[in-house]
Image (cartoon, rainbow, N blue to C red; front, side):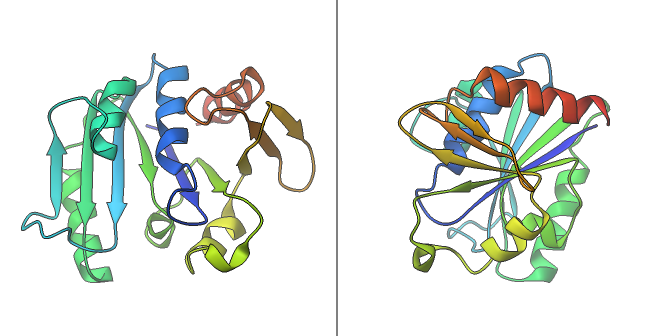
Length: 180
C-alpha cells in the first residue's frame, strides 16, 4: 500500500484538482481518496464515504476522476482525528493505495510521497499548517500558464491544469511509488 499526501497553501490552491489529476493519471492504482477536514462540517460521523461521482463536493470529484472509494474525515481536535483515522483503517483493503488531501495528515502519518500545491506568491494567504507540509514535502506543484519543471532541493512542477498532470510529473510520481 502506498500513501500519497497532497497539501497546500490555502483554500483554492488546487489541492483537490491535483488529487484528481493523480488519480486519473494512474488509473491502475486502487485509489482510496481521502479529504481530511479540521472541522466537522456539521456531520455526526467522523468518517463519511461518498457514494456518487460528480462535481459538487471534493469527494465526489475524486470518484469522478477514477478513485475506487472516497472518504471525508472530520475532527475538531487531534483525538478526534486519531479516531477518524482509526475508523478509516478499518475500511482499507489489501492492495489499496491512499491519496490524502490534507496538511494535517502529516501530523499523524509519514507518506511515501508528499506534494504541496503553492497558489501564487502571497504567503500571507497560506494556512499555518502549510509550514509543516512544505518542510516534509518531496515536491512543490504550482499552477502556471504552461507545464514546466524546475529541479532543485525541492523539485517544482508547473502545471497548466492541475487536474491533468504533466508526463514529467506522472513519471516522477511513478518512480517514487515504485520504491514502496
